[in-house]
Length: 303
Picture 1 (cartoon, rainbow, N blue to C red):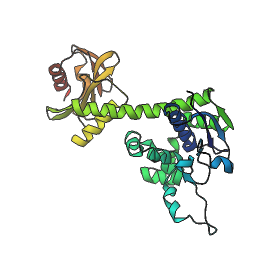
Picture 2 (picture 1 turned 180 degrees about the horizontal axis):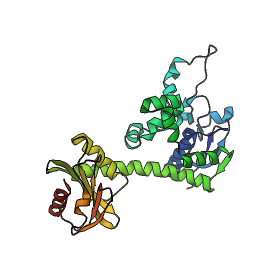
Picture 3 (picture 1 turned 90 degrees about the vertical axis):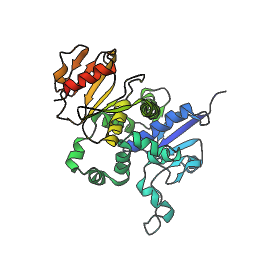
Picture 4 (picture 1 turned 30 degrees about the vertical axis):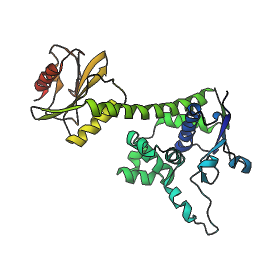
């Protein structure tokens, strides 16, 4: 049985990260959730009154209302005659479209643990760059220097279109972005469960070490999770040991926070050492290096 076809309407004019990202999330979610019509068209314009009431049409950053049952996800509610918000809409001033989506789907708290950018992007859309700079405790000039050329280019592509249809390159790119978001979210929590089961904490010559290289795959989430774990365990500095794929099956030894007690250049001539970074913060050893041998290499690397 074929799925029904659904539609997204996002606002026209200047495109922002919020409406583009929200569109990407909905396109992917509707492609895998059998209870939702699959998106085949994305319009960039204002919805009609009939469209506002149609639950098969997602209204993203348009529609002047937040009503998940009607697929209305706008954080710009109408003002009273006095130019004020209705009390029931006050919470929307802190939100953006993608945060409303993720909260409606019940995954906001999980997502912000994985993706630091979500809080920043939410504040940027809801409050503007001055609030973001204050939140990050940086200057507006520093914030400007962090702007992504690639993001701006994709936004420009999105902005030029009034209709994006299923199968065309931009539609496929949006679906990929949504797919990658949910894929990494799942990967993070799957990897976290493995780390909590397999990670070992030890001290070698008074240096803290976290080891997690046996029977675990290298994923995009593994190193950030180990970093998170070591910060909770001992704070700054120390060493992590985890799998590497350059070459496949090898093992990484990595120092944290430029810990001056550790220099892996000291082991560059040792057996089983494949690679040492010229700054001394990282070494790669053969995959058949046993735990006792790794410990000896770490001892030699400690100044």
